[in-house]
Length: 195
Ligand SMILES: Cc1cc2nc3c(=O)[nH]c(=O)nc-3n(C[C@H](O)[C@H](O)[C@H](O)COP(=O)(O)O)c2cc1C
View 1: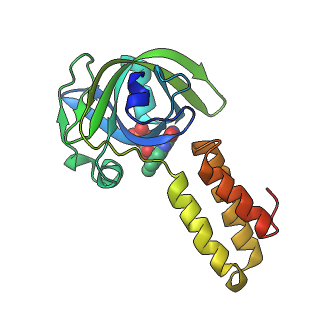
View 2: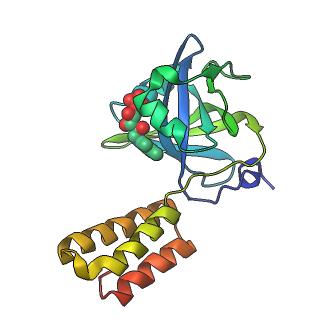
């Protein structure tokens, strides 16, 4: 079994992580989604204008940190000065302290799109602790859609439809061919909405 498969990742599914970049004395971190197409390399889509993207393009290496809970996503975005880092093993970029798992990557491929760059990274070192929790948005989106389905008659139909459609769009993106997708599509049909 390949390393990323052992971590619990599913091909094409998007997992939310904290990507750390820069140098140990000048660390930077922000939340980003990652996925694998082959269980060997990791891909991410970075919108242009991101400091993380600029660091990756300059330094050609970065770390994917898997947090233990959602708090580091908040901290990275709103209290960056509270983030704690450690030295990495095989790259220059720092890694996040207290992560459940950490992957050190070097850039293997760069694909420029209209508004973003897709970066493909090769794992050069990994640390996997106990109880790694992979954050995928599909589960909570299905839950939100189920709650909305019970309230649809008390809401503006346009608002309800737009939210359910948006949830379905994201579920298809982050968990393709999953049972979450099947449930969301079936819900649309049962509610008489297009899917
Ligand atoms: C859970 C989560 C996932 C995110 N995933 C991405 C992503 O995949 N690509 C992206 O460009 N921005 C993503 N963002 C937004 C970036 O984290 C945000 O724009 C951040 O400010 C970028 O920071 P930087 O400019 O320091 O790199 C995500 C945000 C959150 C909270």
